[in-house]
Length: 190
Image (cartoon, rainbow, N blue to C red; front, top):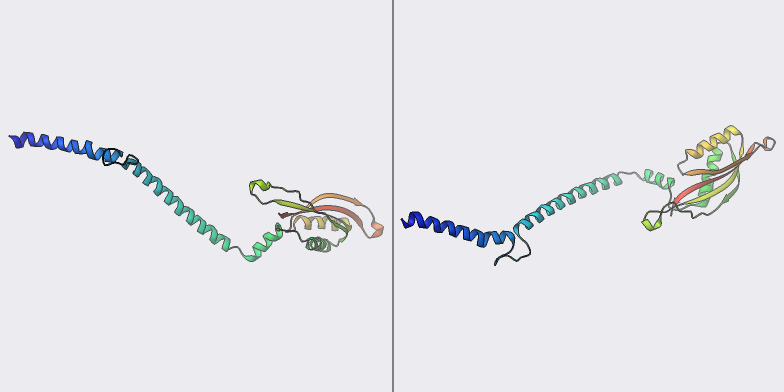
């Protein structure tokens, strides 16, 4: 009778005692075997968070490799075109030569070139962004009206950014064509 009634009760009480006295405190992180700082539930939550962070890091590594491949696929010619579009410095002589070449393609003659320095910034340096500065160039071009329209079209489609800021003109057909006094600005990374 002892074995049939009392032994199962003792085993149930021992199992409850082991669970509530040993297993549950270990799960919660307290008791004589727990360190009081971490428990199994917290460790499981931390594992989930770390696994998510690991997956995010792997996704970022894949994206970084993809972007690196795209950057390496950019040809030197395209990089040069980008440098021409927004250079990191202004070569005064080359700027004047570029404007003169545009004028020559449009049958215009350039004269009275005046290059001014301007440090007008277009972005906040405090924000860590690159500064974009401008360089104004004033000059006079001489030629017919149709040629001047072609000249303005060539300026607007030039790879280098040239923005017309000021324009005045005078009629001087007897001296070889109309005279157009212009100021254009070009941009560069500071």
